[in-house]
Amino acid sequence: MTPSATPTETPTATEPATEPPTELRRNRIARKSLPVTIIEPTGRGISLFAALAEYAEYSALLRYLTLRDLRLRFQSPLLGLVWVTLMPLLPAAIFATIFARILQPSTGGVPYSLYALAGFVPWTFFSTSVSTASMTFVWNANLLNKVYFPRAVLPASAMLASSAELLAGLVLLCGYSIWRGYPPLLSWLWLPVLALYVALIAFLVSLGLATANALNRNVKFAIPFLMQIWIYATPVVYPISIVAPRTRFILGLNPLTGALDAFRAALLGTRMDSALFFISLAATAVFAIAAIGVFRRYEALLAERV
Image 1 (cartoon, helix red, strand yellow):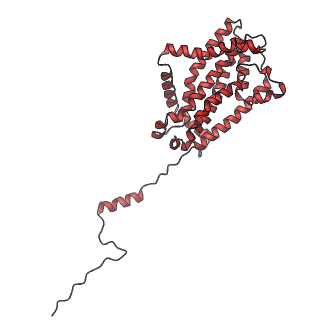
Image 2: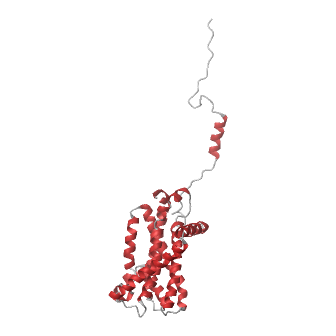
Image 3: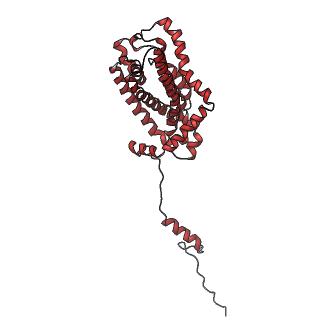
């Protein structure tokens, strides 16, 4: 007799031929039971007030970056002090000796050298702040790609570092004003407030340009050209009175026009053009909406685009 074959079980399609190891089965069960966390960019998803609260939490980082920029600028304190003093003083002296003699603009009895210096002190701060802060996203590309922090801290720190030049310029301007026979006035108390206003304009312009520069590198070539045009669109070296009253509102669309006019009025005790100031204030509000809107729209993409 032939011995009968022992029946063998063949694996079905629904059951594996071999049982997986115990550790592998435990890992699969553990992965199924773990919570899932989804990380998404929050630049456009949180409110503006929540974003401001987040910036308050990173105030220590803002101080550190500001001090870092100050140390880089003033590696030689004496040379740095001389430089920040000459930056507004030299252009004012050149325009006082050449521009005033050729055009002889009417400054209401104020010496033109003092009038020009009162314009160049805030303008030099604005120009320096915008030129440096607009490059901060590109210059700090490695930092943007390594760690998270609110991105606007970078242009803000560059602008705050430039405020040392504004402070030195204000001391120089007040001293020169006293020397030319204009004693301190109660309106001088408005000078720090107006300096903060100029700093706000500089930050808004820098924030928009820094974002645009991160998205398109060609923007950096347009910034020096923009500054050259902007200085003549701002009453830095000429009085507003030379512009016809019916077209003066066009000059007020420049946010710096009202700021510089108010700055001179507070320093010299002259009359300020209130209508022009409020037009510039409205233009500043438009600048703020545009700059903050562009920045919040592309904030989450900055690390990828730089």
